[in-house]
Length: 517
Image (cartoon, rainbow, N blue to C red; front, side, top):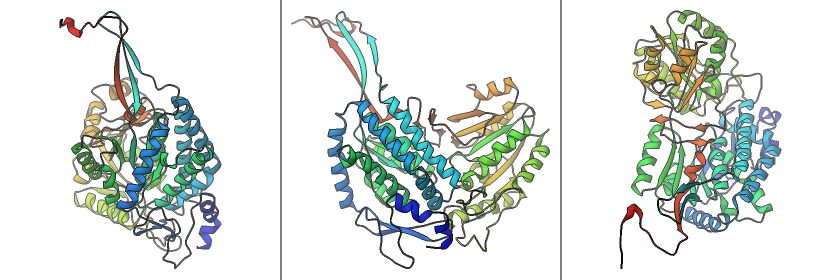
């Protein structure tokens, strides 16, 4: 491995996580979680091969499902607080491995090291949340219309939960699902993105340590690797009652159709086209901080990344100037170097989509106020580093209506009152995250009202990204309608059952119906 990689401690991180790196120039894999074709993981940071894993074949998958199904029979019988204790132990392991896992996330995916650490912290936080939740999986009691009867609702685990995650949050989104599913009594089968398979192996290794130490079946946490065809094993499998899928809207529509065809349940977290409304009463300094982080954080590869800035015409030039000045201060480079703000895109394909977006906005009549471009030369050998760009555009531009997974921010101007800005914000197919910058109470409340933002997340005086695990995460429209993480999102991982108990010696029927023999 290159000296620069070693200098940032990647080799030690891989060793700590049980992920064996291959030597440069070799073609054999070091991590065999299947028996299929090899998947090579190249870092977008320096273009180096990190390791190779074997993909999951149909035969492998059948063994995994048998293992998971068997483990479920044991796991579901363990009291929920005891399952919560296992999740607590997993959180402690994550605390021990936080630095190493954060570095792997940064190196394999390309986000900054601080963001990598933040992602692992999200895992820890959701585990803490789930551990407490394990004592609060409450039902509901109701009054029966029949004398001497009691009615209540309770929740039971579903069984095997299939999780399909995306490259941009290679560990956190899995944990959002898994921690809740585990305390609910489910077992999990995870297919991580084929672009970040090593993060999946690292998490599986950590989880396996915990289950082994507690003499629990290994099938409580299972991993499969491969492309969309491996994902199809789960989406078409009636033994997997719930599929939680995170990714593009295109992918989500395919998953939804496959799962619905067998009357299964799906939890979809799909694309976002997120906007910040900037009113005349906004704090400009706060606006710039929120907009810049939202647009360039994770190199614009968050589902909650800020894509559109809807600015009132009276302050438009002021905000534009402040943004241009802020972009001049951005440092682009190796994300493991904490002096850099922006790392690489995930791969060359993502770079090509970025370039097409910049061409498209100009072709439609837009104007680049911060020109983009692909960086080359020393430190940029992977070909995945690009300059964050800002374009003046119109809301109706096709490219503005589209989610580009790259650091491209569109400036849109509005006039009149905040209702006009809300109309512009809502006039896209996606409905994930939204924000308004204003010190005007009426504007803020209007934005949050039933006639305001149509997104699953609506913020005031913070940006569109950076959601906390305590709230339910997800969006509407083509974002899929799913909810993960906090609040009562746990209910999707369970089946509801209504119970009626008759403790009399008679059998009265509901609705006063008489049926005498």
